[in-house]
Amino acid sequence: MSGSPLPGRRQRRSRVIERPQPVDFTAFHTMHRGAYVRWASLYLGSRADAEDAVDDAMLEMLGKWPTVLSKPEPAAYAWTIVKSRTKDAARARDRRQKVVTTAAFMAACLGETTDPIGELETSLAIQQAIEELPERQHDVFVLRYSLEYTAQETADLLGITEATVRSTIRDARRRLIAALDLD
Image (cartoon, rainbow, N blue to C red; front, side, top):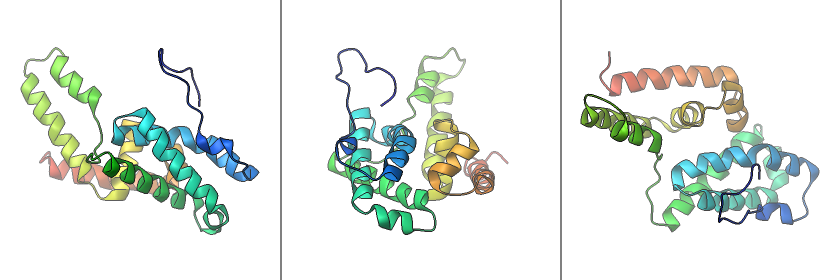
């Protein structure tokens, strides 16, 4: 885990690193866990819940590591496991899986604006339109714009090419423009 824990919180260690692991899994874990936790935190609204969900995913991957490596795109397969464990965590906590857009909400509510209600409505409409994107477009859009990963980082996390990230973003933008009636 990078950085120091928040005041009053104990620092958590991933449960995964406590088990013996193949070297390539250790490298994968080190490279991807932080991004996976950031992504899961958006959906679960809690870093601790996100860490638990990602650790569950990593333990599942560790248990079938040879299968993960045998896939044409191991990162893409790993991403599906992380998403599945995140959805399981949301269901277990009786939460609807939803991107938390606290920054947009706070900007609309607290920002200096002539029409805070209008901005809030727009923000909520944008959030709804993003949630209704097809799964791949949604994932790419959230990684690129909510979490601010580069196209290459997004590609690496999803196990796709950078060109696919760019074309997926173009398609998502077109769909959002149409959904928000911004033509």
